[in-house]
Image 1: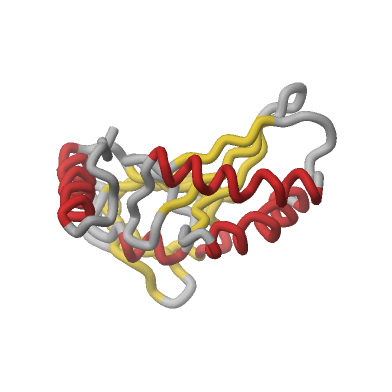
Image 2 (image 1 turned 120 degrees about the vertical axis):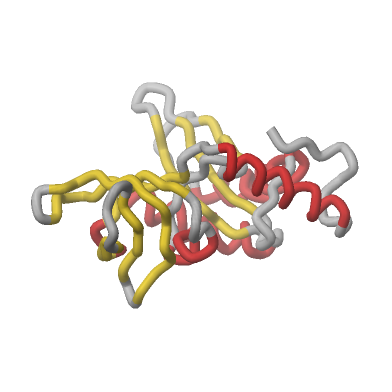
Length: 179
């Protein structure tokens, strides 16, 4: 994580928590017209358009006061989506059993990219059952460059079910639609 992302995360995370959200990722894209992307979710994994607007309204005064990005920029608050990035150790446990793509910062034994079924974590390692292999690869979390779930029918079914379960429990507005 670069210095700016660390600074932004330190500003954003307390506000997100205060509003009832878990921060998933903070990223700045674009050099000429930068966009500050804030990805968050409720502790149950849901995030509605209304939630995004609520978090955006809470973040705006904090970001305006601290002015962490030079010049003008756009603030974009979103949910992680179905084929979400995996950025925290807990993500690898939460999404155990689902297919993922993992890219490392540097190659381990000549391999930098992995694809397989998440098998949770072990200590500070990510566990992944690789396609076509009988063993589980242990990848140090500190080596993680990027990871995300692979969009599969199983993942779509699980996401739709979670949205419906949350709606039944009264945790999302009636107009909630899982994209």
